[in-house]
Length: 215
Image (cartoon, rainbow, N blue to C red; front, side, top):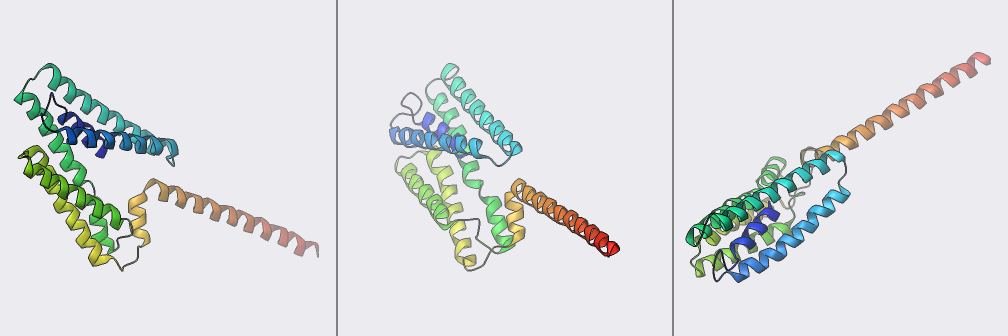
């Protein structure tokens, strides 16, 4: 979601789409490069084939959405209409990006633990949303103001949750819900080890029985 948001925001800030928004274009262009690196690293080091294919499919969907928005705004629209389409697309996916940690916030409330919601990341979300919100207000740009205002509020909510549950320790239930496939693989690994141990135990018992019978 962050990659798609950066791509659409960088497109929105280009001079032929939205004049006087060079900072939006350059900063989000750098963000798109960084997020692309993150995605590539994940694809290289993903723990299993299922996670790799799922992420590759999401990355393909991101590229498709960005391509459609860029082509339609360039080939079919001009002037204010072009800015409107790019701005609406940026707003929708910016809100989706800021809302994506809601699942983690729900886990924090349910497990009463902030183990999987790092403080620095929550602080960065709050500061990023707030700074862009102020930038949008000063520039009278609703397409920047609205989504980043939502991001500022959600970032503040994360910080409040962190302050409430910061002293609580995590539990296995939260880890299982968060990590999914990795936990499943670990459980399978432990089960296989237990099974091997049972086999070895059974083999040992058989050998011991044979020794007793021989005596």
